[in-house]
Length: 152
Image (cartoon, rainbow, N blue to C red; front, side, top):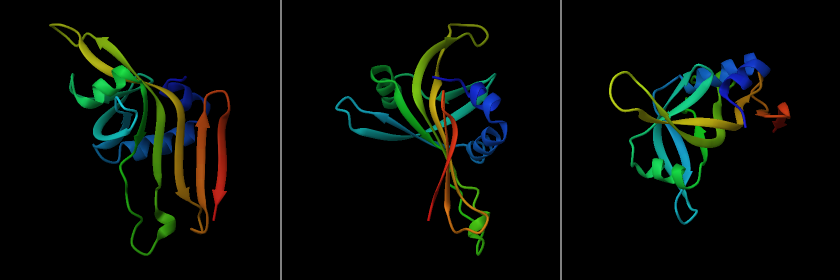
């Protein structure tokens, strides 16, 4: 598993595009696994800080309980439409998969706060090529690096 900084170090331009998509709006979509193994989709906020990706959630929330039980998760960037009449201008969408790890952090006075750090297993940027003819899927994995696939 990797930290966000590993993606930045290995593929800075790719990481910058993914980061821009994740920072385009405040709310992202998080997928976790319920107790019975079925998927749960929840809204969440993210923070990229000191080389790590952090998820924001209330202690005791269903998504926090899901991650405590089974740390596997997937995160989807906010969706942004292409400019009208310019499909090639679509910035695309980004996804990050991995494991949500609970970390206690001291945030000033008082007891430590609970945060969820993402140990990354996959980062994907999906977008159209310059002619808007092919879907471009760029996927980065630890140990494999960046791979690009085209689909018509």
